[in-house]
Length: 260
Figure 1: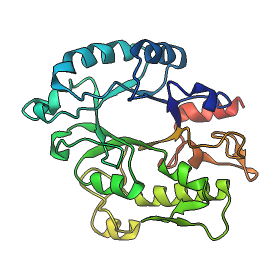
Figure 2: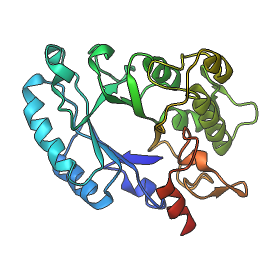
Figure 3: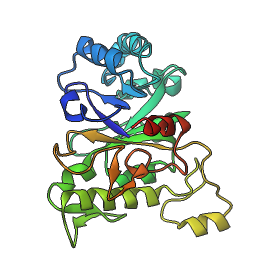
């Protein structure tokens, strides 16, 4: 599923739909964010990070306005002073978002505090999958594999390394394939990281009844590349480009595709 920051709509203007609107957290502009969400009407958007407990009420009010134009809104609590609050102060109407720690930042709150459906924000694919053993992950995003693809690297299921053939589209394709394999059979508290689907089956784990949303974030997807989310690739309809973790294409997406 394709997404972008509210500052980068030009990167995805060729796509039939933008499902996720991320934020420019360093220079956040709520009015601009709200205007884009009102226009795009995404499936998911992110409210500004709750870096201070003192800003919690303000962020909730902003999230309520965003929710009028987005199917779901995720809140990203990051202040340890929120630890004593249920769901770190995030109301039930919003999805909690765990900012996966990277060299650029992340949350220091305990994963155990993130209850209900959780969105994983950024981070390496393998780290995201390990965190899913501690939380009920319903959606996640990332652009690491798109950035590495520009240098001929791909995710092999455990790490990033040079692709033997190379090529931007090839690296994207292989990375998404390997990322999807990580999540085969996943259900909260069920499919364990590192087990094959067969091993999970023997252990009694069943695939999650809900499809897990994976959101590929622009920038990172090079403009002018042959990868075009939702269009044919290599003479076939590449559903993984929109729904890499689903066992079936959602009906709404089939209807959209039929009109193209």
